[in-house]
View 1 (cartoon, rainbow, N blue to C red):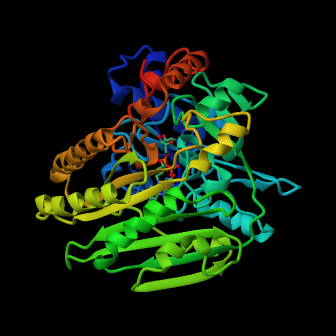
View 2: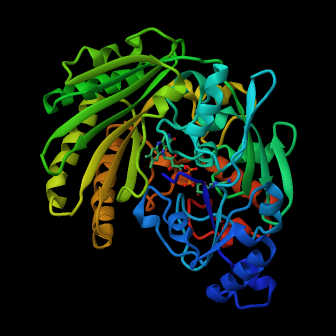
Length: 481
Ligand SMILES: Cc1cc2nc3c(=O)[nH]c(=O)nc-3n(C[C@H](O)[C@H](O)[C@H](O)COP(=O)(O)OP(=O)(O)OC[C@H]3O[C@@H](n4cnc5c(N)ncnc54)[C@H](O)[C@@H]3O)c2cc1C
């Protein structure tokens, strides 16, 4: 994950404004960079600056390391608006030759006087938010690990531990300040531009650049946490506990997890692990009793402040080349075990891939997580109902060399397609694909209700009639025409 927030801008809009051939990206980018540097001086970093490489490679996925023409680091919304050229690119990605807009300088966090909400600028990571809230006994629905950026989660959905009671991160946003494609700044909430308010809740980077989020602050000073690891022999019981947890996690107790099974290429070891969090101070957290009953190699229970918990969960930047790929299904432990077994066998097919770091992740989606959007008068673009729980099974794979990129993509996509088809036949499949767990070859919007996607496109065409974010944003998940 980036320790900063980065948006990627191409220079084509600038180029066309200057009557330069749009196809000539380098010329356009050079013009844009020269103009930006003339106006903003040190806020523009070019390739000869000592900080250029650090900024251009500040990503968790090495595949995102590219060479932007320059990096513009505005300090406020006016600078974003005045110099908006074209919009963001692929999640966490970069751009060769274009203008990278990095919002790391926008790091304000302001807690409301009554402690019920906070305003957060897009350059913050969730750990910054938890750090600001903890002294006030407050918490928020954001990233589960330390370094995840605020804007991604707020715009694509957001899985936190406590979603079964408080909904997804996007459901906790009360207002967005947005710079539109024509440079206009708008406030977006339930009374001001309400159609866009709905569309931003899952609509990702298709509408504008958000320069401020107003988010619900939750009075949760302490959380009960558990870290558990197991031997490979525990996998069947572990998967059974996962399916049970997904299906039986009602909102009377707020609780959630990070559940994964990792394979160590060097030792051949398989390690199932649980990071569990429950609201309050009951320790060990009772919602994870099914996991606690399995003989473990480690069981560490604690009552912590949110910042104490999150600050220890620190995935490094520039880990390796990383690919997520996922599908969603009803919680059925027999089928889930088969999917796991197939993943484990398929590791043999890629055992010669250098630096292989494969993880089988199971993200639980309790039915009640959808209740918040169903009852808050706003809704969200996912359109889920709150009668069915799901599990996202995700292949998270790291590797070392670019020459293996295509091979690893095919490896994951073939398995996904096969098991999704099997799940369809067993009536276990959901077409929902969470953007945060999706591979770049997947289309999360295809899993949204069709009428929602149609409405999202109509709203996009109203707020971005020139198609700035549609045409000139070269990556990320696009709504299509
Ligand atoms: C180690 C790791 C842990 C993760 N844990 C979780 C988790 O706990 N829960 C979860 O839900 N997901 C998780 N994810 C997935 C995560 O949701 C996505 O990676 C997400 O894109 C991260 O958001 P970001 O702001 O850090 O990233 P970015 O990649 O910088 O941004 C995401 C997208 O939003 C766009 N964007 C960024 N800023 C703005 C803005 N101000 N206005 C408009 N568009 C903008 C970008 O262009 C990009 O398309 C995890 C990923 C990793 C690698």
